[in-house]
Amino acid sequence: MFNSLQERLESAFKNLKGQARITELNIASTVKDIRRALVDADVNYKIAKEFTDKVKDKAVGEKVINSISPGQLMTKIVKDELAELMGGEEAVFDAKGNPAVILIAGLQGSGKTTFSGKLANYLKTKKALSPLLVAGDVYRPAAMEQLRVLGEQIGVEVHIEPETKDPVVIAQNAIKEARSKNKNVVIIDTAGRLAVDEVMMTEVSNIKNAVRPQEILFVVDSMTGQDAVNTAKAFNERLDFTGVVLTKLDGDTRGGAAISIKYTVNKPIKFTSSGEKMDTLDVFYPERMAQRILGMGDITSLVEKAQEQFDEVAAKKLEAKIRKNKFDFADFKTQLEALKKMGNMKDMLGMIPGVGNKVKDIDINDDSFKGIEAMINSMTPEERENPDLIDGSRKKRIAKGSGKDIQEVNNFMKQFEQMKGMMKNMNKMNMFGKMMPGMRR
Image (cartoon, rainbow, N blue to C red; front, side, top):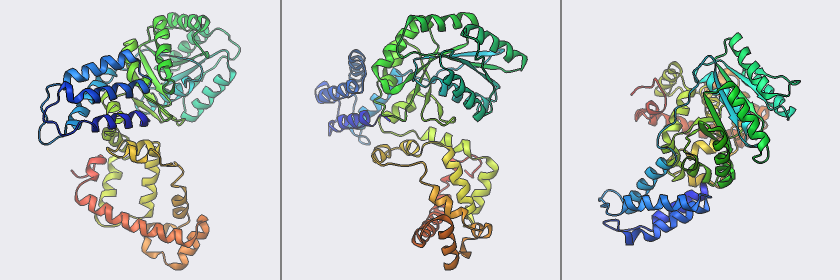
């Protein structure tokens, strides 16, 4: 995500060296490089120019103190201005009502239906709400079926009327059903087109006028750059939407939409989405996104994702076992399962400061753990709880059961022992207390 922009900006900051004070003269080339990087990331030139002018005004005259370099100071200024450009603070999302009505709009292929399912899952699991999904796309039976399948997957009811061709009627009927079933949120997935047209705009405007939603979310494919911003402008003129959702952030995102959409339509980005899994939806935090764009990582989001997967009781039990050097293969498998639930492995590594660029060209497959899991699953319960039992003959059986050779099993056993030692040392430094709730602080 944003790899090209990140590299260009880092290169620009490196050009600013060995100065005691930042002046117009010594940052001229740096500012020019930042502007070029933004334009290449599909940010409108006017926005890029205004942004770099602000950065220059903030930077000129700043005194460089001994503990930081001019490049680091400039990075801080750019980070603050990027965060401000993208909205400054987390936007409020209103899901309160009887029921609250949320209208989802956007072009075909932007990821509206998948996002609708993710939002329902987020409101159900994170906010303890009872959502009802509504199939409002009357033109594509596949969209109705997709929403039905997603609803089954996350355990959320879906209102579908395959014989009704008026999306306004479908939306009104869905709200009645929600009230009768005590559903407190209604999420209406609307039809999209390949391009903005009058029929689509009139239809979604009619739905808006009929159901008066608390939230109208415009879903945009972040890979389309400036085109996405232009489309958002057209939708906003007709719908006056309340917020933007950026999808497909796991793709080849140049960054133009994320950086300039708030400036263009003056509406906040509320969520970001990546991948097809129903739990890959994140609240948008401008400062965290600015940090990631600049390669500064996002340790706050990483810790939050970790904490979601570890409860207090389990964390305390794990800490006690690590302290006694009793961490076993059963514990390891549990941690692997929790780690997989946190999301895409490459994205998570990108949240660690300084790691993002180092893994950008490495293919990190989310199935990488399958071989390890196969070896653990080939062990008996006693072997998992007491790794010291595993001798040569047991290793041969584990290798055969997992489809691995004996050398792979030996390597895994060796790495596991090294990891146990590392975890014991981390516990002495209380590193786990920072990552998991309930650990000793």
